[in-house]
Length: 475
Image (cartoon, rainbow, N blue to C red; front, top):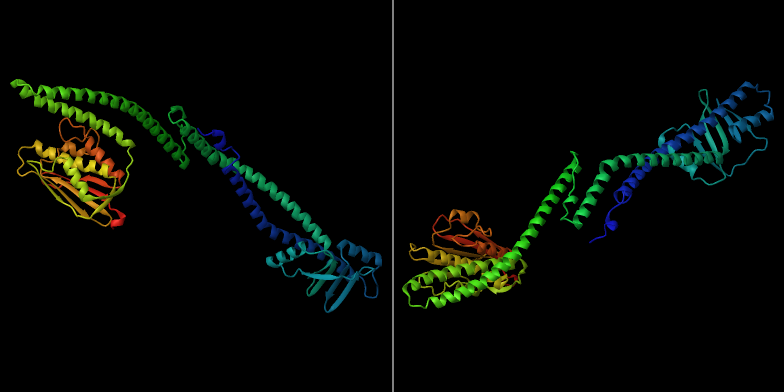
């Protein structure tokens, strides 16, 4: 018995973990896709703010007459409010410069032209700033507040990058929070709709497998109308059928053991009675001479019935041992055992290729052929109105099969026997028969990879067609 605790999935294992991981991954992927335009917009807004400060500084310059100079503390406050090292205002071919008292000589300068507002350019600029090294100076270029005017601002890139990193950190934290909340909400929804029902089905299958004879473990289906509801109802029906089949099989197995024992004892008793009947048949009493053959026939029939039941029970454990067999010798042996060879009243005809070889269990296929030929002989012997009774066996070779036809010109099969021809205890063609012969013959044929079927010809008699696999070395 399998330890159920080692195989039963928990609530947060298997599909649950995969579902949560998939939801979080999808949300983070969406956040990454949204993050790049958002970061580019943040950078553009940050630079626009600095340009607006530069425009204000330019207006201050316009307000001061050309003959006057701005006080140094005012220019320093303007530059400090903009976070800039210098501000240049260009208009009508003229340029005005505001710079710190101690000018800074930049080592590396990168230009951010805010006149290009397309999304790809903004994203490329944002990524360039985000992954830039220290010490760069940013030259911001933008339009002024009047026509044909430009504002340029020189500033260190470090404050912009620091603000972008803080913004990115906040975006990551918010994204993780959204992903966690969304994943949990979706998990609870999907779990109630799918995960828990699937786990219920899985646990039921595992428990039922360990004890299929326990009817209390049969699944009680819900009233769902979707695919899981259909699965629940079908699983419940399958478990109910399996429970019934196992119960019936156990009863049949017990009954079979009892029948086998009874048949064994009955056969021994009938054998003893047969020996006594043989001795009685030697007496000179006319009445005994008249009744003794009937007694012997009846005992033979009873012994045959018991033997056939025992044979049918033993066939379940008989595994075929296929080997290359010459089909001509196989049919000759079967005809001899069926007492057709040298029969005083029934002609036996066989048309068999000399070198055709089949790949079957010789003893089992001999039993099949003996059964077919014996049935044909007994049918012809029981009928006194058949002129020139005969049994014919014809063998033809096909691509990878051998077709064996066993037919006779007897009275044929009654309707009831045709309907249940290969059903045990149902398909007997004569009174007192068990119907096990053809049932065993079909099982043996199919176990050897062949087929056995009855063919309606419309003419008197019976015709059985038997196909067997040919030996691969003879192809």
